[in-house]
Image (tube, rainbow, N blue to C red):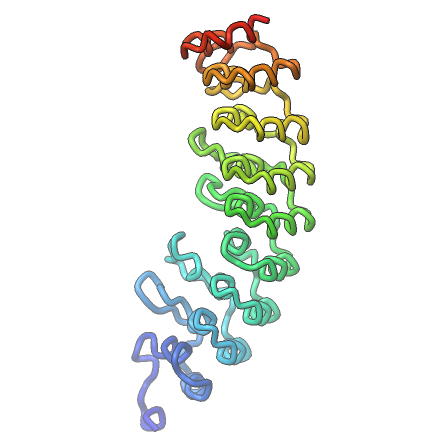
Length: 310
């Protein structure tokens, strides 16, 4: 009745958004028939996005379907959504956040482009279900794309490994994810962001580490991996990388040095013996101590000298 007497629904910001959240489908129809802007953003920093985003966020599949038929654009993204509120970036993000496969299918089926919003597959690999990841990949989203400032999140595979999502990790690898892509921007103090293998050893997840190695992940492609594992006292992981992944025991990390140097600095004689039996070279120079012998002496591990001196 109000609309019929000249009430202008566009004079009240957020009215259609509110209707798409709490109203009925008939109310939404009435507002749209009165020429409300179907794609208008609302909220501080565009917090609520478009009416379509609201309907998706509130799992209103009936209203979502109607908005799309009425011309709502599923690819509009708010310009102000921060990283810590990823579900506000687009309707697709909202569907993934709600783990709503039905609405996700509706959006993808009406032209929503999963490659338009950076980080969508990464987010799904962290918080979504396996079915949602499958839906996005079937919609031709880039499986090996980097995301984040300085590529902080790496590839979707790195995200699934970092979040211990073994189910999604296995599926991504079967779908063609490359386990050997290394992030070009990972700093020295965030080594776990360099590659999926680094992420697996950082999480001390032997199951996922084995899955990656079986899928062809090469521990020699990421400098410093074996030394990083040694630094964290993980002889079992070192053995796994060497015996299952053919890791080169003499690869150098610029700071830590070789794995042999790391274990010498820690005084782990059994680990030294293991690496030396494999042919590790005790005379390689580099790293913070210069050599394995210096590492043992500097840290007061005289009991390791006989191993190193042979």
